[in-house]
Amino acid sequence: MEHAASPADASPDTSPDASPGAPAPDHADDLALALRLADAADAITLDRFRAADLRVTRKPDRTPVTDADTATEDALRAVLGTERPGDVVLGEERGGELSENGRGWVLDPVDGTKNFSRGVPVWATLIGLTVHGHAVVGVASAPALGRRWWGAAGLGAWASDNGGPPRRITVSGVADLADAYLSTTDFRTFSEQGDLERWIALADACWETRAFGDFWQYCLVAEGVVDVAVDRAASVWDLAALVPILEEAGGRLTDLDGVATHDGGNALASNGLVHDAALDALRGK
Image (cartoon, rainbow, N blue to C red; front, top):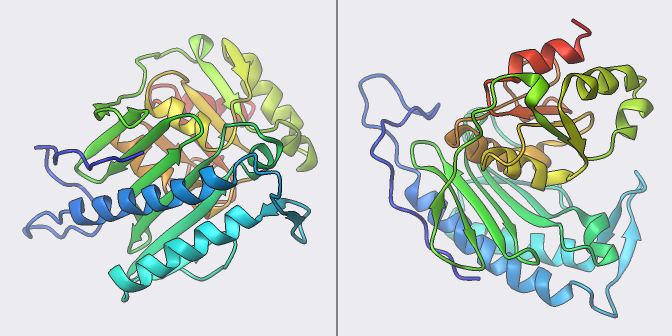
């Protein structure tokens, strides 16, 4: 799929690396690079998806990793090493560290590896850029679905279908948690953490529940299809790329304690209108 970055939005930039009185930083070049990285990733992942010789192994935490995961991350790191040699990189497969005082790219080469390894088309490459610890650019590319979502601070949130023209996306207007559509990845992670009652309380407070899971549920929140998404366990590479998409679409992402972070080990995303009510449900209020 070939995608071009959308035109910059006319609204003022409120990204965290902007200083009062200074010109608003423009992340258009970074977004364009992230979209090119997604094109490169799509070429690798689609070629290996449902391949008869796909190699699947298990990491120490028993989660699967395929040859597509490592090949994709290596390819993206090679491009970033040339295009942004001064930036650090953190990837799910090759590790790394982010700096609170600089720029860092966050890569999840295949988010939804279990789906990928089983031939389920719900998986994506996630590419995020953080500046001074804040996520400011994000791309989620799901080529087997023919879908891509992207956003950057001050530039809006966008999606495209099958390489078609970009369309701006916004969250839903659902204002009552009792009317909200809720998704999670696997509710059993709440049980594993001894928090099953928290999931049940949130689910009971919402209209309907599904398990769209992983990146997809957050992108569905951003485009107004789902109102709340929650994960009891989530890593920085699962979330960093999704924050700019959600926030530019008018949504909100915090950890389960309500702290605005993509590095809290868990996540609650919403259209913003029902966020506090969802947090209260998780707290048993």
